[in-house]
Length: 411
Image 1 (cartoon, one colour):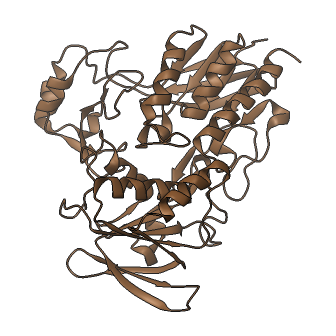
Image 2 (tube, rainbow, N blue to C red):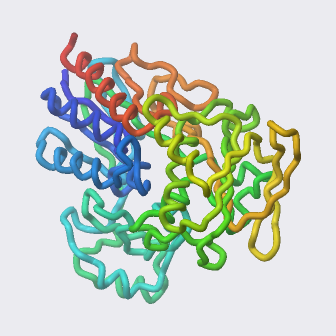
């Protein structure tokens, strides 16, 4: 019987769970499908409660992982099979090819010389990356990735003779014996294409709240300067459409918890960069739980920001690249159509498992959140279980590690 624990998902929840479990004395296998650890937090400009950059928390966790020999990390890896029972599972994982060596080699010169490009997943498609890339700042592991499908013909010839690159590397599968499993698969932004009344992702200057995070990041596609995607100009008028897909029986039938706080934070980004900007926030309810009420009050005092109680019904093309926002003011009963240079959709938090499946004996609810499995020694944590902010996700990771430890110790 193994006392090892498998953690599926390498975002902040999974990192926390892995570290806590290892510090309890368990061997931990951390499996992440992306090339680097960090999850959604790594894509943020700042995060609550202290509004510090993601490197603030993630680098501490990365250092703890590096120093703990009980943690084995598998990136670009998927869980593809499971057999056994609580306390004695055999998990099959597939390691997808990275095509680069298992140690850190600086490929920046070669990468810059390549022609082939593909949309950047880390930048949510707002820019392109090279076929050989390390898209995430302060990446861990600090290894590059080669995407053969993005190579041009001339690139393929250049890469074929490059030292330390193995374009013929294949996926491989291995089995791990574990006692219990923690599911920390996180969340994905609700797809704007599902919201045709709000542009459906067609208008260049209508972006999601996660895309706004990347625009504001000093490591993002615009170097931290918030610009309109259409022309690279700083917007002077911005509309936020809250509950874009959330609290809607046709889309996400729940409150995504973080959307209001994300908007308040992004209002501060805009005002700090341009004191002349004018912002309108269209909302159903304003939710700032606990101590976060201080941030809401700070934003409400800004002369640049106007709050309108009313859900956006439609976003239409305006003059040039501007957009017209149609909404009804629920207080006055007035239907308004106003023009803005940039619109931000506060898209909801959808569990990753709503669109992906894992070979695990655990039920999902109608929205894709994990709704059980503990009787089988499988513990969901963070946003795999419910919408949570960063601090509560970390707490959930600790709680899951304690539960999984009890199974691994045979208690």
